[in-house]
Every structure is written in structure tokens, then in C-alpha cells.
Length: 89
Image 1 (tube, rainbow, N blue to C red):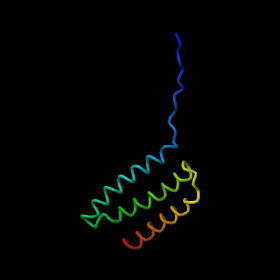
Image 2: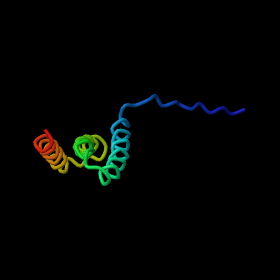
Image 3: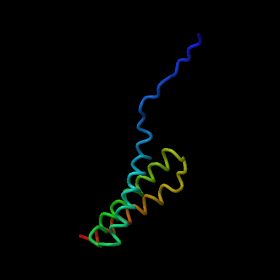
Image 4: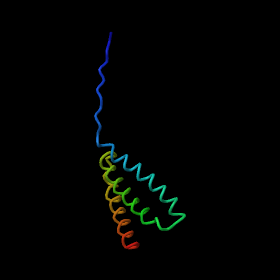
């Protein structure tokens, strides 16, 4: 009888960035629909948008190896965060 030994992969924290990005995109879609109905939730929408930009910058370096877009994501993330703070506080 032939038996095949299968190595089990341990949990890796590499996929956490992709999971966070997927969850934030779902939250962004939810808050965009809510934001159409009520403008009270727009700061949350912009905060989630800036978090997505930072997560995309992290994933861009970690997974996709396209380092030339990382500064663009970081700059857009800071711009959205600062304009949200200035506008809503």
C-alpha cells in the first residue's frame, strides 16, 4: 500500500493584508450606500478609504512587488486622511 505524506501548511500572516483589504472594500461599499442616504456617515467613508489606501500600499510591496505605485497610495491615503480631519473636525 502506497501512502502519501502531505505537509500541512501552517497559518501564515502574509494573507492578513489581503483579508484586511477585502473587508475594508466591503465596508467601503456599505458606507457608500449609507452615505448616499445620509451625509452623517461620510467621515467614516473617508476614513475607510484612507485605510484602504494604506493597506493597498502594504499589499503592493508585500505581494505584487510593484514598488513604484506604493508612494502614490501613501500620498493619496495621507491626503484623504488630512482633508477628512480638516473638513469634519
